Amino acid sequence: MINYDSEETNLYDVLHSLKRLCAVKEITKETVEYTVLDREQENIFLLIQLIMQGKYSDVFRQAELILQNQPNNVIGVLSLLLRSYRLAYKMEVCHCSLSALGVNGRTFVPRMSADRCSEAMDVLDDMVNLIKRGTYRPDIALKVALAKLCCLQNEHEGNNQGELLKKGKI
Image 1 (cartoon, rainbow, N blue to C red):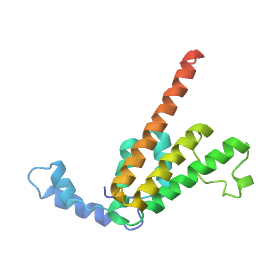
Image 2 (image 1 turned 180 degrees about the horizontal axis):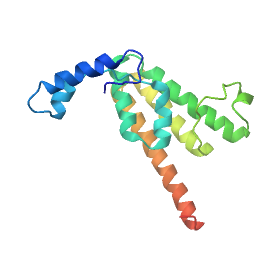
Image 3 (image 1 turned 180 degrees about the vertical axis):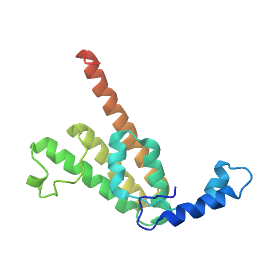
Image 4 (image 1 turned 90 degrees about the vertical axis):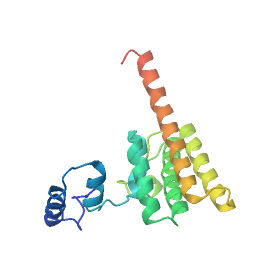
């Protein structure tokens, strides 16, 4: 919440928030939310990593932050996710590296089968088209797309665990 790692947050912000909390008779979740400075910022580039790590609550927290700070950029967010899955698809099909694709080697790309990447790309393409047609509001489309991507990842992990179980590695 206070985002101490942020450049805008310093020790005085933390001390000020603590003093404000000490002045309250009963400290509850609501009083903390009210008195502590909220310096949390969205990180669009972190979304794909959170999905792949299975940190779904963090995925939706990032979605909320994105919608608060950049409500008109949902198609851009979905397009960035689409790019990640396209790169993963190309790497899987062509058996090539990021540098061979002309992409910075430090770019995070999900490790998934071409079929899973294709499913994820279909989800994202559909959501962008539904926004453009006016079928879905951007905020709803973002949440639905993220939920579907999380489900795909969860299925992917479940399949991997099933294969490991069959091989006797679990």
